[in-house]
Image 1 (cartoon, rainbow, N blue to C red):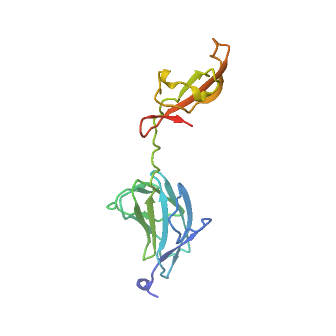
Image 2 (tube, helix red, strand yellow; image 1 turned 180 degrees about the vertical axis):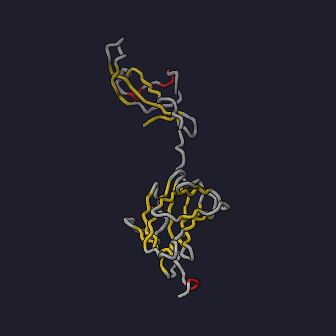
Image 3 (cartoon, rainbow, N blue to C red; image 1 turned 90 degrees about the vertical axis):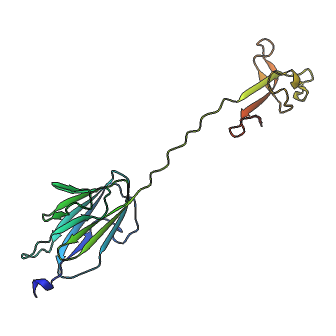
Length: 219
């Protein structure tokens, strides 16, 4: 068989990575993918790998070569399809579509992708054919928590219990605050009554409503 008729394809076998091929995009911060690159004279479909990464996350491809032919070198080229993030192997990094592809010809080799802030794709292409397409989706950062300013503390209103002993008989017209609001009193005990001797009181509370900015009675 002539060399020109031979098609060399990179077949990828994932070791210890469940659901690597054909899987839906997943979050995989600082993941290691161990693969064996086997040079064969047969064509096959493109391998698809998808991950969702946050900026600064890494995806490391540990590439090992098996089944090499003495007359051929199972050489891999890495191309950035979009300029987001970076691809690096020993001695060289590419960060742009216009950069010369990384050429991998020594084995094993670690190729590290560092994610940026945008979606990107890159491709392994074996000499003579065979494609591995990698799609990286930029993770959407969680929204910053919205700090809600704390409102003023509730206002506790107390009066000495009327002579009748019923808080329903409290005369609110004599009060400095909330004199226009009637009712809502409950019986309680407080130390301040009777010059510190303590006694029965009628009590109620008011809270500032954030929406209307009005004071309402707390039930």
